[in-house]
Length: 283
Image (cartoon, rainbow, N blue to C red; front, side):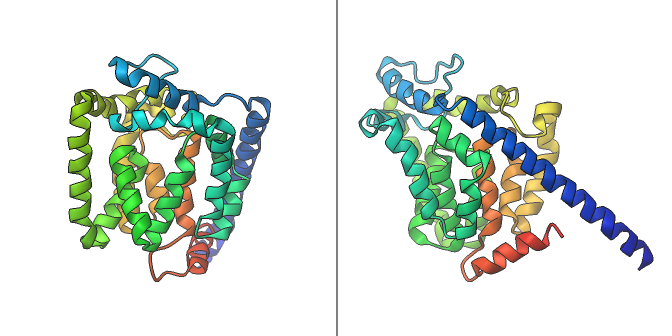
């Protein structure tokens, strides 16, 4: 009892130091957005992918161009100029209003990962909205999330996908059908082999990315030997936000938005309880 009492202040001090460090990193990140707010990297990639699709060079990567999504999405991206970058960025804020947790929406609003998402013109916040509602049990969101796992697969999406297929058996066959449709509709584009190859190649390329926030930045692919089993353990325990962080071979800033799953819970699990669970885990 005495030993436990002595370690408690140390534990709290470490947690406090981690929180302070995270807040400081968030402030620094937000400052970089203010300094350099015009570099819509991913928006430019989407437009370039649409241009390259009919040329047969969709997956010919040359920095800063790296397109990893399903090939059948590329022609759809040709519609983005009609939307415009300003409207696309505004849609990110609309997405926050659609999150099932108001606290999560407010945290996202002041977080560097969200603003990095807005700044680069990526679509990670839309994935988070689908993921959060899918975790809550919404059928439309679940179907959308499974479709996103097929069309824009990312390692960080695997823990929730695995959890859904594990806990909600009714979605196993629909997901298999979606995956088959994804492959079949990719075949006529002529890009299927290149797309599959890109999924394995992207991890190696992004580990060295200047924006990589994963431990792999320091120990390389060796992180997977730790991260994958850790993600499996966290998934079994229902800690899908942290599992998403652990499993990815690299973490770009907007990927950290998936940590927001710690503030929501499965169907029948009150959002207030999910928030309390997350809070109690750091006490």
